[in-house]
Image (cartoon, rainbow, N blue to C red; front, side, top):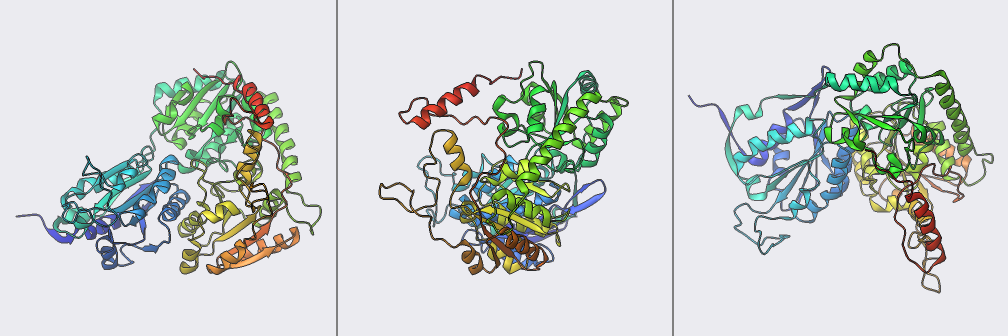
Amino acid sequence: MSAPTRRLTTAQALVRFLSAQYTERDGVRRRLIAGTWGIFGHGNVAGVGQALLEAGENVMPFHQGRNEQSMVHAAVGHARQLNRLSAQAVTTSIGPGATNLVTGAALATINRLPVLLLPGDYFASHAPDPLLQQLEHPVEADVSVNDTLRPVSRYFDRITRPEALIPSALQAMRVLADPAETGAVTLALPQDVQAEAYDWPEEFFAERVWYVRRPAPDPVELTAAVEAIRSAERPLIVAGGGVHHSEAEQALKAFVEATGIPVASTQAGKGSLRHDHPADLGGIGHTGTAVSDQLARSADLVIGVGTRYTDFTTASGTLFQNPDVRFLNLNITGFDAHKLAARTLVCDARSGLERLAEGLAGHRVPEAYEAEYRAGKDRWDEVVEAAYRADDDSAVPTQTQVLGALDATVGDDDVVINAAGSLPGDLHKLWRSRSPRQYHLEYGYSCMGYEIPAGIGVQQAAPGTPVWALVGDGTYLMMPTEIVTAVQEGLPVNIVLLQNHGYASIGGLSQETGGERFGTAYRFRAADGTFTGAPLPVDLAANAASLGMDVLRAKTVRELREALAAARASDRPTCVYVETDPAATAPPAEAWWDVPVAETATRKAAVEARERYDRHVADRRHHL
């Protein structure tokens, strides 16, 4: 007797399969693929598009996007909000729709966040070659534009026959659900195969649960780690995004309170401890706080928990200056755990911290060390207060005063999203995180345009949660299109749009590295041909309004506070538009960032910048 089958197209089978996939961790079950974003063209409209229509919203919710890259950003925001336990799929046509996925895929994979990409592809049969938008490679006939997704995907396959979907779909789910492997997963779908019928085994559509493991540390590695911590006099924890993904915040809090070891955070790890916890020192690295970076310079043991050590975190190999410094890395991914020649604990963050706490029972850092970092934290709190303070409510606010006004408006569970420009540095130094998911910074790829679509993804994952997308004018102009989606879906995402007439962050970096802010201002050309004329007369608030948002214009600190409060109370997508005072009120960088400077130049600014660069380069070291 043959096993029961169901006759469906490949696309119909894929949608049915995806609807039956679940993750489970700690007894909590979620849909692995919670919905599908899509823009349709000839490469997927009659395949995946028809399959989604036939399945219906109850089987696979559909979200209509406006830009392929931003659909991936929305899916990433959704996955991060749910600690990687749920993902979304994104389908596009072949051609520019597919290549627009590349930036979003890179962002997902770099940040270790799951997203399923389903781009259409050329005919597997090659019958109508060359079809519309086809890349014709002279010596590799099986290459399509989708191959650009290979290096930025954790798993890639091209489904050239219907039955090939079965093993490939299972592998795709395995990677998406595995915290040590996850990232962008691509199943390229030739358009003729999408529409081809096949007799699928019913078992393929059965409910399947992917259990998200919490691997414990190896006993030998654990013993060595405990000994290393016990022998350290000035240990420092660097908390990364893995603390959040593992939901290890309470385990970290218990570990810190038992041992007295202070915590500095990466951009992804900020909020691992509440900002007012005595051991929370704030950000670390180039955008870190003075107290974090001071302790990093003298630390004899750096304990990385769920961090992949970007150059901002390690300050380009110059921050950790103690000649005897050693590293202990707790990470679920062996690749990241072995960085900086560290001792390793390859395990889940929560499991690892709990086992370390057991092994360190009764151990605590010296009282003098605790008193030192607590005093440093108190001094930095005064810096934050000064940066937030606005003595004149009728004045134009500075960027840090905007953050101060927002800090006074949000509740503990509000989510603040940012990715690029000068805001990440100010936020990392100054923002006072009150809950694990409040601080949502995409800084693995620091992708301009991420914030607004990510806000939509977060809002979908956490209905009823106030969401704030913070963007400068440069970032806003990159990708405002998903405002239309927020309006269409009735998602009350708030945008705080800061107008500072250009790329403020890169302008400052250009100034520091001898580039004299070249090409970073949004201005008319002056008589000499340079972009130093009057600011461009763009009205981004009017643009946001034209896309369907409610817009509140704030010209003063007082009006800003009122607008933020009104936006938070609204049930509509709302933009708070404010032109900021360019006065530099943010505290300066406390660590060096290695950005190469021209080795030879005739302009004075570049010559002086190179002299500064050479002085910093002398402090580089390899941690062996």
